[in-house]
Length: 142
View 1 (cartoon, rainbow, N blue to C red):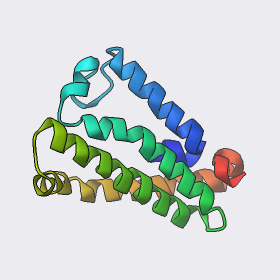
View 2: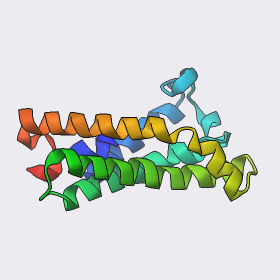
View 3: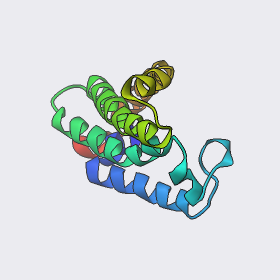
């Protein structure tokens, strides 16, 4: 969420893509100290690969909402990219890798939504603080 909002759609997505590349090389940066090509074969692969389009969409929405104050724009951008887009990819990955139907994947993912809403709020607070302290910090707002 934050990468796209602060760096903009293209650079945010590229930053996340670089992070994923490092993880796939084997650096244990994911939860539980996971890393390596094996992460592409687990049920969370959709969520991992969804980080790139989610960062892009977060940055794109933030740029489109440049007339709004930083906090609401960042909150809408974080929810749109970091939750809606991210869960679209994650649910498709769960369906493919865990052989779940749509309803099962939705139910399995629903438990994480409250935490992700809190992350979206935190992202909006950080974006607003960044914008207040250094207005050029958010690329789409300069």
